[in-house]
Length: 110
Ligand SMILES: [Cu+2]
Image (cartoon, rainbow, N blue to C red; front, side):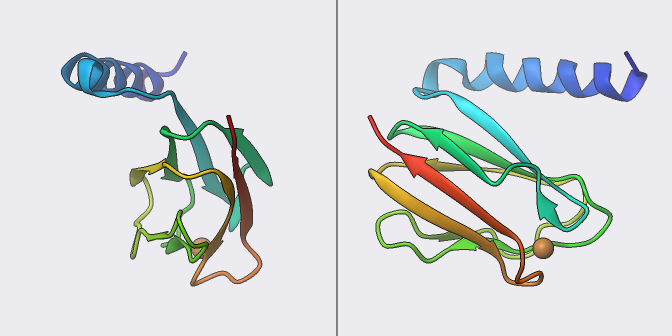
């Protein structure tokens, strides 16, 4: 494994230790690479978290206007990762305000 990956794993492990007790639900990572989401859809349960990680060399602005699961990460620079917890059942349509063809469906169901 590369050194960068080890550093990331160490940081992620530390973050888990620090916040472990407070994190109730699972976390999933969806990247943004080549101006697209690394997957077209993901299915999670209410209370679980998707970490949006910008693996690109450009800025993104990930958001959802789906009622009950709306959010706006605003400007997300390369390398940034931001967790979003989805609390309500349904299908959230996630888009990028800068790149209109970016689309991710987050299906939230028990
Ligand atoms: Cu974008």
